[in-house]
Image 1 (cartoon, one colour):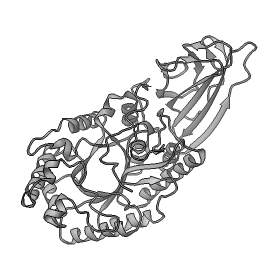
Image 2: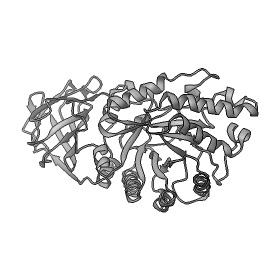
Image 3: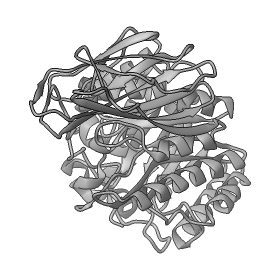
Image 4: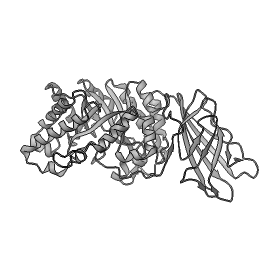
Amino acid sequence: MSKTATGLAVTSALAVGGLLLAAVTSQAGAAGTALKTLAEAKGIYFGTALTQSNLSNSTITAIAGAQFDMVTPGNEMKWDTTEPSNGSYNFGPGDAIVSFAQSHNMRVRGHNLVWHSQLPGWVSSLPSNQVQGAMEAHITTEATHYKGKVYAWDVVNEPFNEDGSLRADAFSNAMGSGYIADALRTAHAADPNAKLYLNDYNIEGQNAKSDGMYKLVSQLKAQGVPIDGVGLESHFIVGQVPSSMRANMQRFTALGLDVAVTELDDRMQTPASSANLAQQATDYAAVVSNCLAVSHCVGVSQWGVGDADSWIPGAFPGQGAATMYDNNYQPKPAYNATATALGGSTTTTTTTTPPPPPNSTCTVTDSVNAWNTGLTESITITNTGTAPINGWSLAFTLAGGQTITSAWNASISPASGQVTAKNVDYNGSVAPGGSVSFGFQATHTGDTAAPGDFTLNGTRC
């Protein structure tokens, strides 16, 4: 695959840019419901990637803050952003990501210091005898700027060809294979406490490319070069998670290194089929299970928050649906499978309300996915009347002990007891025969029952 995941500005650019996630309490992602909580209980992290543009989308930031405990900047720490011209630095975009992470008690994976892609032209145009100085100055300046604020750096990103040979780029052409050791030493000198990684794609299973990485890091360790881990990007196609992934992780950790799944997604042809979504759930669970089974696999990060902000459709036309959240930021089967793999117990129930009274003009169906002390519920209102609904307000009563932490496609208040869900600005009109869906995430104390009675604009459905 011609990999541009770590370099591609998100071209699907918030296909649902107007979508608003209504955080109905300040406890979004409360203990027991979030992936990060389940992951932390297992001794790992569960992260995501964000770009600066994502920070202005309240849906994305609400989910990111509630569900994830590690952030990787999508583009904001890459060379073309941080040093667009020689000696002129721009850390504003990266600082914005760091600020968001700090305000949500999240750590940051620095990404990245040296990469052949998203490299400003002035670097590639340098005489060979000036490349090393420019590289060392760039690493030193950026790593020093973020010293103490970054958990780990992808010091060198994607250094290998598919056959396991070193990629020819401005750095290897000027310095040979020694540029990698030099980059690691320079980064360590600038920030001795940051974990230092080499990161690449298609090295998740045992193959020629991962063999090349294994040989290199073995040599680096033997030479005393400061290196702490290997990042497995994990940009998969449904059904193609390598069977040798766990064994491959184990051979790297046997060298005394950490491993991390750094950019997980799992793409498919769109529109997504139910079979592919089920396979995606199996794939996500397998990746998480592999990490949990390997000592010194420190965490898993998904590349992006949901399908609407994923890089996949822009890079692979006709493909997408690669994350745990759909285009409306509702959790998919992969989310529930991930929660279960992390130790949560998940149950699914679907409830249809009793037959509506005579002359009713609506029906409501809902589905609950529950685990441990958390649940998600999806509700669909259908207009069975002959006139359009212009503005809707659906009242229902939550089971005792349930407290809503976040919602999508509706604003809901209060957070518990008898609640009312109201349309947001883009989905208030429902034509005769049409329907509208919304959902919410909630904590619970044991009762995961769905509401049994709904009232739409004052009339029971």
